[in-house]
Image 1 (cartoon, rainbow, N blue to C red):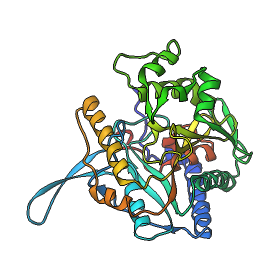
Image 2 (image 1 turned 180 degrees about the vertical axis):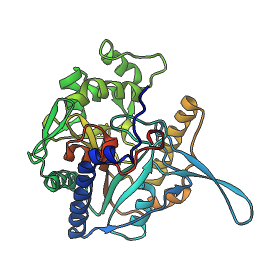
Image 3 (image 1 turned 60 degrees about the horizontal axis):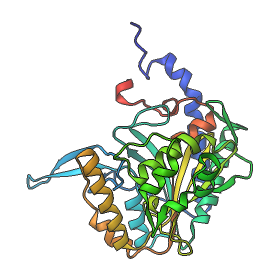
Length: 347
């Protein structure tokens, strides 16, 4: 059986080097853009009390020994979000980080267990501001590599074209024939209503929650149609999928959350940030109860973060998968082609 040569083999590295040079060009261009916009580039800690509190995100953990000999558990962050928001509470107005983040149970063409998340926040702005930033950042990446069209698995996107803006409700209606907002009552998902609406479109298990069914429809029927020809900004996520976003004050059925797609690939996920610490605690606790039920584990809440939330100004923020962006901007076909060192199992 032929063994694939290690990533540091000179011939294999030579094949990957054009993609790595593209990575350098994109990073240089984006750093210059953020600097010109007045952002402060920060470096926040990787080891955290809590890696994040989302049901389906998993984090590696480690045990540290204190000088007194006590052992404490720390997690490798899934995002720099908690730390960046603490900096907003501290008075920073614009922060950006090229953050090393970690996701357990993830590996594939678009997923790595360790990757770079480009994350930035603006104090005193609505989420329209970081929506616009995201479009500009993607265009700057394309300019840096000189590519005219993003291509991935037979789909194509012009990164310079005016993006289409679609609500989540609109795409569920268009691509799945589902009136999604009819299944959201009082900010909560009506599982029975969505199951009935999605019957025959996705496989529904007895223990699927409203969010599970929502995700299946999104992945199977909606996402493949997004970012075709031009970028798609998908916004007004239903309130049950708000995560760390605030609910739209004009319509409690939806939240100020958006995602950006190119070639059917999710590139960015942004929020009009929630500043209600009590509500955030409720959401985190529910998510950890769900994680405990599904996976037999839960992560602690970062009490310091929850304390900081109530001191945050109105703000918007977005996380963009930097490696995915480089993959599209360089013409690579897999995400591991655009990282300097491959995951340990590929070495």
